[in-house]
Image (cartoon, rainbow, N blue to C red; front, side):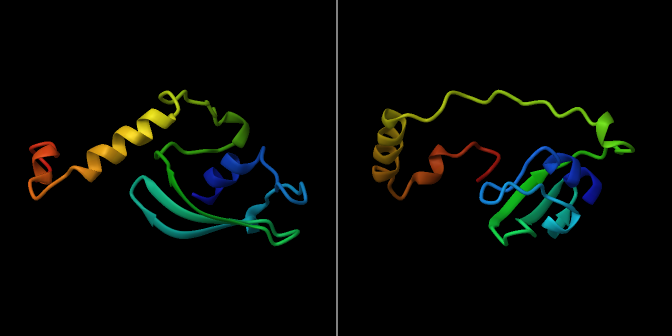
Length: 106
């Protein structure tokens, strides 16, 4: 699993000292099916990059060059109006807030 994480961080460097991340930069805190909780620290300058939740599939990585890393486009960025709408919605919730959840979650 650490090999997959190393491949994920292989083209990145520390934003402070510009050193590349190595095997010792990645610490796995917790591992579950399809999810890894990891901590990233620059071993050169000590910059702490915090905790990351990484979803990983079960594809075996033999050579990091064989691992296709694809940037996925996400939804439109959240704008000011979205934040105001969410705030108003949450502010107006009452004791029947569960009515807004999908039926299979209640």
